[in-house]
Length: 350
Ligand code: TTP
Ligand code: MG
Image 1: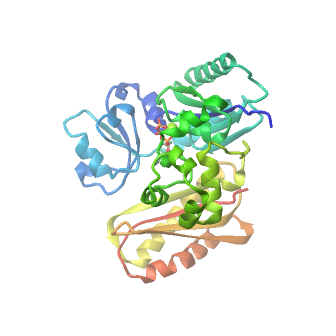
Image 2: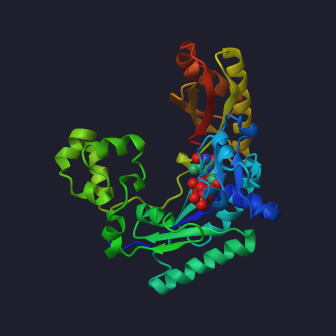
Image 3: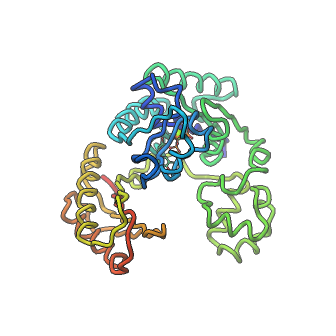
């Protein structure tokens, strides 16, 4: 098979960068986008932060109270999540980026893959195309991105993250093995903290260690199917195509209660609000129906559960969503444990 040339483009510090374009005065200060910090008593998390805030140890997913503490004594700016604005900018960006290839795949609000196998041949041409894309984003949106280039999606995505912000990393097919060898197994999409721990416990930390462990040992720990793809990934092999897959797209919302609660009536009222907001968002993104509903619940102790149902037919109404989400939540609510967060998402959108 002919070697492919895949680009992975990921915007730098996306939400905060959009905020800085809107209000350039803040761009030399630490900027955090997330739930309200409430003088360090806030209970939500950081969505993202700019690179100045990252120097203080702030990062996505961190409790906002910790971010607040780390930024004490600085001129940090904390901003709420303005999802409508980011969605609007994202749609404009995706329109520009997807124009570079018929084979594109939006992977999240700020990431896209392009298959440019037929458009560029040499490293020089790859660099020229990258500059053109970066310039386009600067001119149109004043935003920077990082680009990873490789023979498949997996390598391209890992490469995009190596030299952020405003990076460009090109991995040639012959360099794939060297590129991956010393990296942690966590760099492989699909290996999360649990798999990482399991791999560490059998002496596997790096991707090259994963590549050289006997298949039988891996199968013992993970079963045939998972060990087969892990083995391929460890060798930098990923045959998946760049294709826009609407089925995997989802919209959703979640909410952290001000105070942990076990009042089912209140929880379901919040769920109703989340459903209304999510379905509005679904329409704004140009979809009419959903077919899969996923609910998420987190107890006080951070124990988290998700539960999903795919309906026989596509639906568009909030009543069905409320009925199904109530059913899905039922077992978790019956536990009578205090709840910290609820969330819902809709997928299989059309
Ligand atoms: P990322 O691309 O992972 O992060 P980023 O763009 O902020 O920073 P960079 O790529 O330069 O490392 O995610 C894109 C956006 O998604 C991010 O701006 C905010 C949102 N997001 C969350 O809301 N929660 C999260 O835990 C993460 C990782 C991202
Ligand atoms: Mg990003």
